[in-house]
Length: 146
Image (cartoon, rainbow, N blue to C red):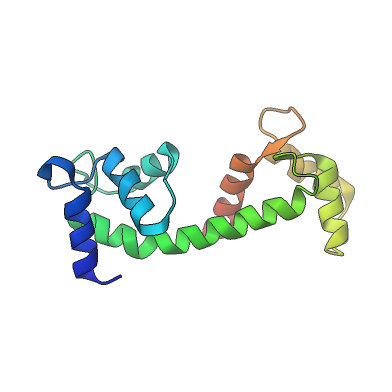
């Protein structure tokens, strides 16, 4: 998408001509760009990463930067989702320790069960024996960013 297209989309999504895209505008823009509606957590993360933010949303320049960088984030999310589905072999929507053990076995990775147990406990923040996709995604993004 070239800059003219991005500017046109910005103007179309900027309800009331505020000069910035608020949270609702960002949702609409993400649907039009990628066919995906960003959830409130992703929007908050996006806005909180903007240094010296003046407006409660994205200015045109910030939106241009977002468009160019967000495609890479979607690719990472797709990879995370696919990996989660490989681990979640029974499609429960969460992972338990057995899912981790089976995944490592299928990948022929020899790991000490205590190491797997420790890693699982770090991901299972509430101690219910389950790791949600959201927790898994956060962990995968944390590892990828390091």
